Image 1 (cartoon, rainbow, N blue to C red):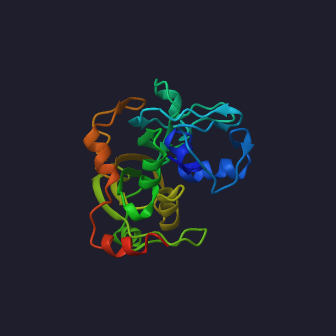
Image 2: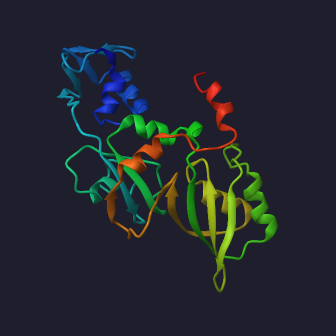
Length: 251
């Protein structure tokens, strides 16, 4: 059956569909010896598909892994500078890539998969998968500072954050542990929200993505997701605004 080449590449575990579109735009994909353009279709059963002159193998079983990313490890499939990445921590003979990035100084739950379609779903705001964090801050926040997080904050690039849920989980001698729930994940968002409201952020641990929790994994440990966890990730998060969004999702 013919389907779009980027979809075949994503299903074979070469990245999200958008990343695979980029490979095509960069002229790195050939079908039966001919460099293809975006929109091209192929039949993975009959056609010979190559990325960077390497044959694309489509029959990979899908793998889904929950990993506790330690601090200092990159949320990337590979690092040009040779730094340690999340994929280096997982001993699986498959080409995996991370879903739901964490910046290098943050730690906690990250998902690894070779299923480009699922990666797309999890990252798509329409699916509204909540992400929950434990955040250690260097001083005790005042109500007004936390109210700003709950209302949404304009970041330095002009983006206004969606309202965050935030509660003080426990106080420390100088600061506090906050529980922060976001429905989005801008780069370094929590650190910047802290900086802009005068609450210095010392540590960020992501504990949940959708209904997948970190459980008792320790830094560097990982486990396979269960089939029911994978099924829950495929479903949009239940929310009153969801039905409103679905009508406009195909714009």
